[in-house]
Structures are given as C-alpha cells and as structure tokens.
Length: 371
Image (cartoon, rainbow, N blue to C red; front, side, top):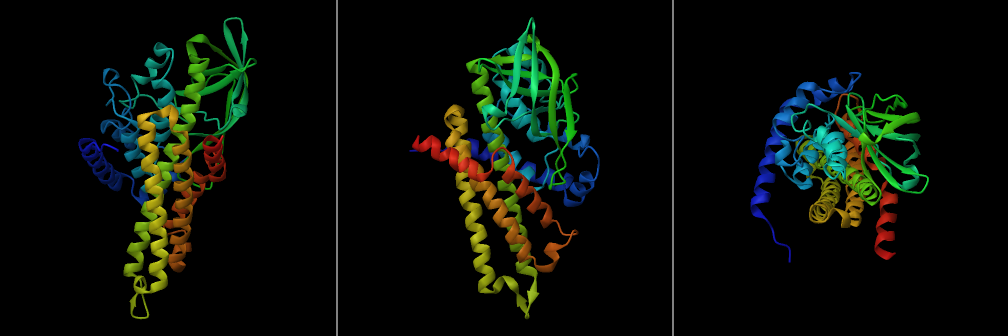
C-alpha cells in the first residue's frame, strides 16, 4: 500500500501555483517569441527570478544553500516550464548537470559548482549519452587525461560555466568530468532545431586535456552517475512534454467552447467532443506514467529505469498526439504563424526525439522487464 504524504503534496501544489503565476507574468507567449528571436535565447532577468524562488537549488543540500528537496519538487517546475514553452537554462542546470554534481565521488571538485547553483551564479550543462558507445573516449597521459570524441544535442551550453562530460577509457572504465565549456579542445557548433524556443549545440572534442581536479567520479561511481544522468534527462523531458500536452489540451478545449459554427459552439458537436475526449485520455495516461516515474525515482533512482522510460514514451507520444490534434481542432487559425499552437507542436516533436525516442524507450522497458 502506498502511503501518501499530504504535507508534501500541499507543498508541491503551492510550488505549482507560484510557478504558474510567475511564468504567466514573465514567460507569456509574446515574451517567449521575442526571446526565441535573440541569438542567445536566454533571459538573465528570468534566470535571476528562478534563483530568487529557489528553483535552481531545489535538490542542493541546505548546507550548500539549496532547499534540500527531491526531483519530484523540481518536476513541478519543469512541467510548468513546459506549459509556457520556457526553459532558460533551468533544465540543463538544475535537472541535468546538478545530478552528477550532487552525487560526485570527489565532493570537493563538485562543491565549488554546487555552492553557486542556488543563487544563480553559475549556469551548467551536461553531455547526455544514450548508450556507452556514445560516450567520449579518455586516455591517461601522465598526470592528465586526453579526451576525444563527439556529442550532439547538448542543451544550453552557451553561457554555461561548467559542462559535465561522461567518458570511458580503453579498459572500459567510466569517468566523469566537470570542465569549463571554453576549455581548449572543446569545439561547439550551434545546432538549430525545429523548436525555436530552445538552444542546442553539437560538440567535437580534439586535443582536450583534463586534470584530476576536473574528475568528479571514476569507476563504478562514474558509471552509476552517468546512467543516472541519462534517467534524469529522460525524466526531465517527460515532464516538459507533459506540460506541453496539458497546456495544448486546455487551449483546445477553451477554443472549441468559444468558436461558433452553424450558430453553436463547435465543442457541442459529438465528433469534436470525442476528439477532445481522446486528447484528455492521452494526457491523463501520461500523467499516471509520469507520477509513477517521479515517485520511483525519488524512492530509488538506481531502480527507476523502467518507470522513467515508460514515462518518457507515454508523455512524449501524448504531447505529439495532443498538439497535432490541437492544430486541427483550431481550424485554419491553427496553421498560422501568429497562433501559438505550432510552437507547442515543435516542442513536442523535439521532446520526442531527445535522449532516445519512444521506440527506443519501449525497447528498453522490454529489455529490462523481460531480460
């Protein structure tokens, strides 16, 4: 029997309300569009508000200036960011990079970054590898490590002060580094995406030399943290996709209630009702999968892979279905650049592709479940 912590539920509901109000005022569609047209796609004022509200350090321990919360608390914010098509570096910093830093085997190497996270004094990014074969390669050379390889779709690395780099050496030993993105040997190339509201870059590594001071974990600890980083990334994207789906459904229901055709709201027609019902079922199914994954991860991160992959597939597929249905339900106006629904379609499609698509995650669930 599951024991429900009502006090935790109440706190998360308060967090959700505060996040919705703040983002409604500071990340409205017009603001999102304006920010998307800038080179950086980053709003420092909004970032400082994230810090003031404590979002950047939700999982950071209290003795390092954070809130000492859990991923489930951060998930509330990630969902609201998805609803507003926002991100502004929060997912990359608080959901992705913070994970390996929080669990770092060499605490002193990670603490310098963790202390600065809650106040927004540092932005972070992480290279997320779907499989071990995707990871960078490391070779020991005296007192340094020589790193080579490539990576794609690294989120919000422009402007970051530290990037997490997973690697393996010739013996298959896992290594995890925290280095400055501007370090010589790291070559970043902007990677434009269908979703204009977010920023990604591809990475080429050649001639990169890192010292032991930048090594935050090695061996089994690094392997576990790298696996955890992937699960956190997939779960964070699932939260984002769920927020997208939920908002698109609300926009569509609101529209069909107001749009009049044949002297009555189109929402009164049975065919439209059925379509909205299908959208609702997709959203609620995704909600159940996401809630299970969040609870599973908070209880035992190392055992949450099946639930995380299930949530990633359900939430991203729901977002893709609901946003595409939303475009059709909005009629002609839904196909215009001026209407915001196409932005949700593009975010949903990107979420579906990031960190393993739905087919990949279903296969992962099957492999882990059936052996």
